Amino acid sequence: MPSRIRNFCIIAHIDHGKSTLADRLIQKGRLVDDRDFQDQILDNMDIERERGITIKSQAVTIPYTASDGKEYELNLVDTPGHVDFSYEVSRAISSCEGALLLVDSTQGVQAQTLSNMYLALEHNLEIIPVINKIDMSAADIPGTRQQIEKDLGINGEEALLVSARQGTGVDELFEAIVKRIPPPSGSASAPLRALIFDCHYDPYRGVVVHLRMFDGAVKKGMKIRFMSNGAEYDVETLGVFKLALAEAAELSAGSVGYIIAGIKTVSDVRVGDTVTGAENPCGAPLPGFREVKPVVFSSIYPVDSNDYEELKTSMEKLKLNDASLVYEKDSSAALGFGFRCGFLGLLHLEVIQERLEREFNQAVIFTAPSVKYKVYLRQGEEIMVDNPMEYPDEGRIEGAEEPYIRAEVITPTAYLGNIMSLCMEKRGVQTGMNYLDEKRVELIYDMPLSEVLFDFYDRLKSTSRGYASFDYEITGYKPTELVKLDILLNGKQVDALSQMVFRDRAQARARMVCERLRDEIPRQQFKIPIQGAIGSQIIARETINPVRKDVLAKCYGGDITRKRKLLEKQKEGKKRMRMVGDVELPQSAFLAVLKTKED
Image (cartoon, rainbow, N blue to C red; front, side, top):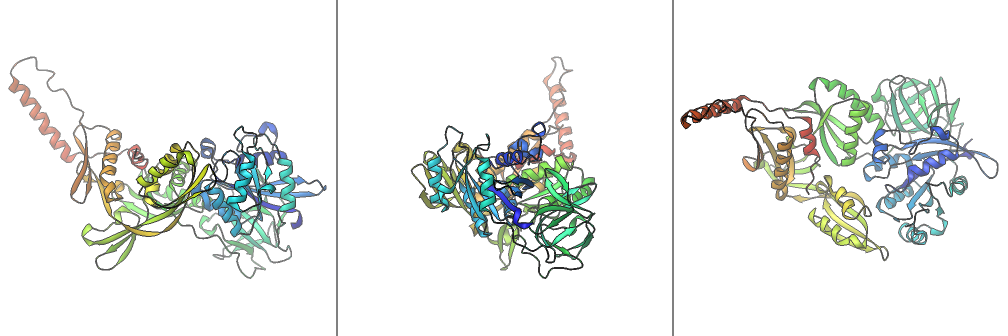
């Protein structure tokens, strides 16, 4: 019954202890034996464990007996904290009525804390502030309460004190969830209306659809319809998430669970779609999620061009599990057929690459990432370009604009100078500076998105010893000096290595790419020049020296002309070899260019 259900998520800045708190709630709910328990239990991807971050929102149903003796069903959604996965957070929030807003007592309110809270307020969620890591020696509880009140506008005295690592305060937290978060509204007797908030693919059972029920009920054997495309299926199995999938007889209004309906056509299922009954459909679909806007673009190609069909199938299944991935078909003279993909950030790109390799056994090559530029042509036409291969000739271009962001950095005052230098180096213009208290300051910068792509986040963390936090939003386009940088290998252009760059940075970027390629490409029998060029002008060059046979080994002393004759003959042979020789680019060379760092 809906009055005994509570749907809530945990939101916070990265590394504030969301997954650890979820672990404690699951242990208290006795969903797993102590011997089977492992840290980050909801993070079921290897990458999540290795990096210590949450990438996918995960749902779990926890049974709880409150102090009044009543049994409650608590549906928890653990969310990521990194700015690249904010779309996952927005989807989790739309399926809940309440949120635990976690604040680290050693670091205080940070950039993603604010943006996630505003996201929760947009959906009218009941917010329970929670101060975590109170067992740490550096914990500043009064200061954190003050920050919650000042920065978030929430009563700091209402914040619950918790140590997720030690389990302190978890019982009080359970009681607060039951008392302060409202039960879901919705009628079990109304026509079925449920929101698809996530999916995953099971090779044996097809698509497993994750649902948040708003009205009505769904049972085994019932015929359902997806409202976006009218596809109809019979429900085979349904249930709730209890770490593993636990079957149930029905799902009714207010609950969170899954259905399996033998869906083999992956494209039929869309995250954000509404599920209704085929015989008694509801009147209007639920509002879905806002359209995702990718900010980083890169092309993916299979290492072996024969694997294109396999890669296509893998991308479909991955898209099902990661709704923020956007892709379309693409081709390259050097690498064959592939896909042009849009990502929410560079970490998102790295995660997709690792998931393709680990989960789907795909050997793939990524091209250097870029953003979407506006290019104005002399005929008065305006085109959007994110792929260097589509960049028009210099002579046709009137001007170009690049996307800018409003970057918000919250940092301890001790690192202020270094961070301002970093932002200026990245072409940032300071538009605001607010002292939040005696120790922390908020910096607001206008800067080009392309400058944030490569190493800004890493350098920000190392400059501030991990204390500075960063959040951004796209603000619009501003004029820029844009050029297309081509990389020539043995005189031939490698289209997959072309990049669009700011003119003043072109030479430094070209030199860096040439140096990386020189270290990665194996030596051949002939000399290989690697060149960076803008149009016909060469702006950087590196040379890979040939592997040469010692043709003078058989000469013991004697006339110098004989040695010279042998060397000239070898030189002629090398020249002919270079004319017909083809240079194979290893996958590591593409990755080396992808991970360029301008240090």
